[in-house]
Image (cartoon, rainbow, N blue to C red; front, side, top):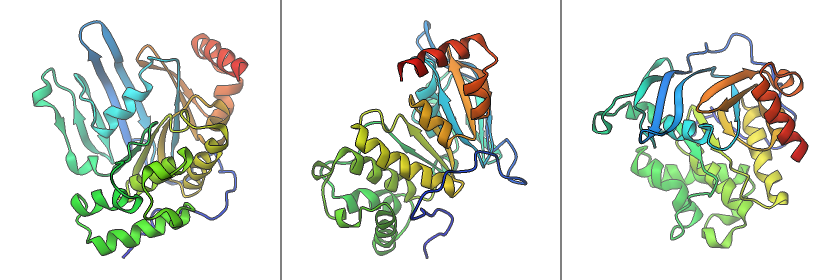
Length: 277
């Protein structure tokens, strides 16, 4: 039976950026003093601490090298950390250690997180359908029939049902990214991570992908989003986090962050970026 937890609406209405009343507490995601470095000199997460609610659409902005994408990769379990702790769904998720071989991560919790990358990461030798059902069958324990039914559902809601048997090379950039989103949704995650998913797309294709993400926002999907598009950030975020030098400098509601940031570092960055746009 298909879950009704994640749905995609047929049309988009601008989401209410206020957190819902009476929803889960802030320890849905909880980072405490997370430290991540490559060697001794390149520190990318410098004792970073951050909380996220289950009803948050957390948009992470900041200059290149500020730790934004690393944060998502760490949350997905693709990168280890050397110090600190990460909680997810109110439980211990990742524990930092000085030894990579002793890294501790709760693999059951990891399966509750989906991630979409900048460059699609679709398997080129597999059809769209095969890309979507691979993980649910191999990891999620679904039968091929159940997984195929779920794949058809998501592709139909993303306007891609006719591409079921197409290969990635036969899709446009926007279509590839929508397939990547559908694939991430197939395991019905509690949290979705989006890492600059529109930066490699032509302008007309950007709208396709952003509309899908806005539709997910309508369904109150918890999301962490790294983006350079400040206008999109204002549209989708419940909260904006500005990172620099591997740490959180400032965070707040979109209206506050974009109109009257408190920190000089945040203000200088936004003035530069918004001017360039």
